[in-house]
Image (tube, rainbow, N blue to C red; front, side, top):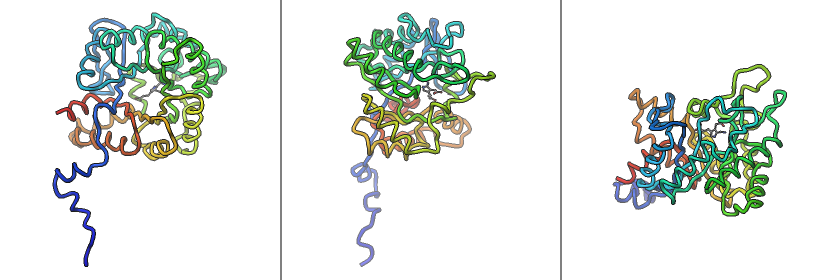
Length: 330
Ligand code: PBG
């Protein structure tokens, strides 16, 4: 008898397709990256990220209320730091009255239940646009880790729920965990960017924060001595395992779409939740293609975020979060 199994039976109509559907996205899956600037009444569009904005604190409050009402319950904060506050050591990063610290409070004042995660890395504060301190043409690890501990602590003091080290220095998870414990922040979590690749997909983000590595003699022009080589996969597993051992509550793979093989492997080996960051360049590509009429924006967007979840993401950080939530809430 030919054929016993007809797979198309389960695809006949939307009712049966939805009955057997394996991966379903909800607003609960998402974390919303937000860019913050000084000023009042500022909502400026980022040129390479159409439809995405930098907000001053007053409008940040408005935005997070809107996100909360859409069912989006976690934000990941980034700040654009004025040039005159930048130095090599990222001193401003630990300023208790700094923009990040005020942004954390602004979000908590607007929506107290909103989960606030903060980026921990020196790049927005660095005159050289590096995630760490530069000395003789090198990004020096251990002094950077010390600076990151101060930065993470000041975020905890300002009210952050999770700190998210995105710098890829060695040993920073353990050092930050110990700093938080020593200062009675047992409940402040760490979401580690564990498998973060040196990626050209971060371009628009660096436009958003004006944080690209400077083009200057003796200063490395890329981040390849700390972010991972994209030819490698075992390295991602090693970084993830070590970050879990050091105390990471959540691990992350970044970028998203080109790295779904890594996401699956990390998910399979990891007993802590796995986050995936669909980064700025991924957002920009779809916006550009859609603006040209070459791709169906919403259809491709949904296909992409579902693919990320199917690959193993428990949490998706995405610039599309709000647009996705609006569609799935309909
Ligand atoms: C900072 C940081 C970056 C991103 C998140 N945190 C940029 C970088 O490492 O150069 C990129 C996010 C994106 O492209 O959307 N260390």
